[in-house]
Length: 412
Image (cartoon, rainbow, N blue to C red; front, side, top):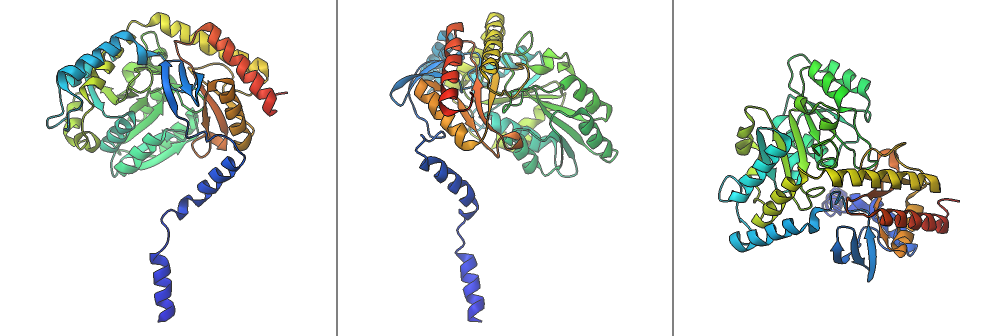
């Protein structure tokens, strides 16, 4: 009996943090080598979309997702300040209670015009947009077919909605069709895809995939977080670029990348879409975005409708950096530049961290991405270019990578 009680006491005192021990050990081993914590960088001052003060020195920013450089746009700043003066610092309420201000309706109208769609619904973050929309439209008894490399917010939306989740190999059209073929006739089906996948910066063959989804009677949701504002003739994303936007049922996006602030959204032409405002829990039970945030987002979105020159310059930056790093001897995640993300593949986490720190000493900040967030357990140095990077800065970046790569032995 005593032994039994001892066992019960041992179980009762199990440390709930013990499941994180392998990660704690990995982090301890990494920091014991003397490298700066790559996940604890502090920006002491931000000077522009492309430059900040980090660790007391001026640093070029190449890991911020600020693709169109809107964070310091003068019109955006003015709009935010004016809304702060006129409406105060926050709404202190949900959108279905007191949290809908004129600015929330205005930004949703701007999104409708940007995408040429009938309905737009704004969330407090991009993560929440995926969580809310996916969990609400696909529930118990429904099926979600999704790319295995889908973002964490997509996976979490699937889990919260309790639908049957059927993943397929990354960007594999045949594998996707095979999964759809096996779903019982008459079941609700949702295919979830991304325009640009954030780890390697590769794009999806949306045109072919959406055609197959429709063949099997599935609805289609495309997350265009990393392409909105940049890819496509009007910046509407990969679906627009590939000529299949009209076949997409739901487009998910975020304000925290090309738009330059924070928030998320879903646009749709579905005639019943407005009921989502009453049934989507992450929308109903969360305070709405502050007036200053929706004002900056609205101004930014309207300017992105006419940002053809900035898009063209960003493409040039992407092509130049991709070629420069490949010519220097680095292994890049894609054969050709497909987006504003250029991922440099590292041999392992330790050498990836050493290279990250060497770049920081050069005056360059990039993202260190590690397993399990990365595909195939890769360690990546993920670069996200900005339309405000000058051609001279891109050449400077290539030189920094080359010097750091030689110093750490990553390239010969």
